[in-house]
Structure formats: structure tokens, C-alpha cells
Length: 378
Image 1 (spheres, rainbow, N blue to C red):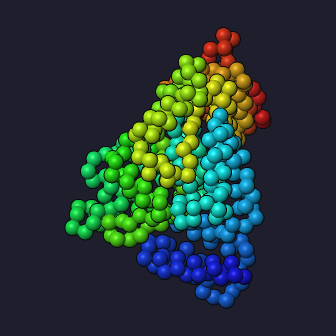
Image 2: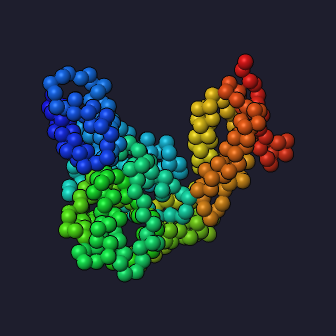
């Protein structure tokens, strides 16, 4: 009962806000009928409102019940399902988030603040997406900033908003406005080493206090966000370590020295963790291909078509898509450009349709992919 009353309080506030927004009268009437009368509604109706509010505001409106606690306990396992070959990185992040959400670590600060180090395409952004999905129910709760765009004077004002009498005052800050509207989110600052030093000073305040004051004097709360910053600084040392040119311990030491030379100690000391992502080995890249192929299979299944890809086909996909400079990042793009395009052509030509069973294998020389409709149900 108490939870329902809390719901009604939140929803009454939402109704007030809706009066200022172009929401449909149907939605307004539904909310009003549930909240402003004495009629009894089934739990499904409350669940529906739960879903609507969550989608509109980005705020999880359910209490941390047992199911949520179980998800938190098994957070690392769920993250491992998406992020391959970075066991240490995943475990470090999951443990830090667990400590924070149970109230045992630095109350008043963001849920977690991390500096992800490593080459392109090793899973840094993928882990950020996975965290958004697991903690806030959707990848859409990931807010990304390319910090190479925040160089020079005015960068801080773009993030937190210009003060009165300055151009852009009415627009608000790009960072503060997003967090005001979506206070429960993962904030990704990509290539943070490229940001203006004045921006890093603002980040120190954010990590320390959990709040920022925008250009209009409003306090913006970051306590329910996860802050992730990525950097490629020193990644060449990790590559040398994986190639056997130096030991991995030496590679990590060289990387950290470069990071400590670039960033101020007061910035690094305020982070929950500095997380190193190592280059991916061949067997781990093969696992990523399998995960990406599962996504293709699921999309084809929506058309009523069964699809199977042989292990040899996965090897060809990896061989064709892998780029040492970009790691696993090109795999998804290669599948879209080649596999999905070919499957689409087969659908248009009528070579495959609902009920078809398709296979992807290799040609006899094992250098190219071969597509076949193994069986078509009548």
C-alpha cells in the first residue's frame, strides 16, 4: 500500500508536468482516472504506468526489490555476457558499483566514476552500454560526449551552460541539461585526454561533490549517474606487451606513467577505479563474432527464417572484419555491410521467405562465405 501511495504522489507530480507538455489527452485521462478516483485497478495498470513513467523520465520508479537485488548480485555475470575478454575490467567495475549501491562507498558521489584505458575496439564503450542496460534498463540511458569537441575557451560553458548576458544562456548546458532530464544514466566522456584542462577541473568538482551548478544557478545532481571516461593514452604499450616485445607488467607500468603525466593527481585520485582493457586475443575475438552473429540470427528469426552459421563461416567473418588498429569494432559493421546485405537480397529475390531454413558456410577453399537455403517448409 505504501508503495502505491508513493506511486500516486509521483504520478500527481507527473500530471502537473504533463499539463505543460504536448502529451495526448488519452494518456492524461488514463493517468487521471487511475490516480484521481477511488476506483480499483489491477496490478497490470500500475505496471503500465510504471513503464510509461520510466520511458518518459528515464527514472527507475520501482524500489530495489529482491529481483533487483539479485540482478545487482549477479551484475558481473550479466556484464560478462556482453563484454568478452576483459574479465578483470568487468569484475572491477561490477564490484565498485555494488559497493556504491549498497551505500558502503562514498555516499553523495556518483554511483561510480571510472577511467577506461586501452586501445580502440577492446570493449570500453561496450561495457558502458552494458552497464546502462543492466542498471537503468536500456542502452538509451547512455549519454555520450566526444571530448575532442570540448577544446579551447568556452568548453566549460558548453557543458554547464552560459551565465546571464552570455550567448547561449537560454540553451542550458549540454551536460547539465541531459542529466537534469535523465538523472539516472551512464555518462560516457570519450577520449577524455583531448578535453580542455578547464573541463577536467569541472570534472574534479563533479567527482568530489556529486553535483554541478549550471549557468542558471541550478544545482544538477549526478549522484544517480555512473561516470565513465575513456582514453587511448599509452595503448601502444599494451599492444607491445601482447606482441611479446615487453612483459605485460612492464606495459601496464609504462601506460600508468603516461596517464599520470597527463592527468592531475587530484583528478585521478577522485576516480572510483582506473580500469585497463587489454588487447583481445584471437579466441576472444571469435567469441565476439559469435555474439554479433546471434544478433543477426535473431533479426532474421523475426522474419520467420531460421539461420545457422558454421564455425568455419565465423572464422571467415573474423578474418575479413578484424583490423588490428580498431580491434573488434569493425565486426558489427562488416556483418551489416556483407551478411545482412546478402540476406536482404535473398529475401527480395524470393530465394528465402518465411519458413525458410538458411545456412552460412564457406566455399571449398574456405576463403569466402556461401549462403544456402537448406530447406523450405511448405
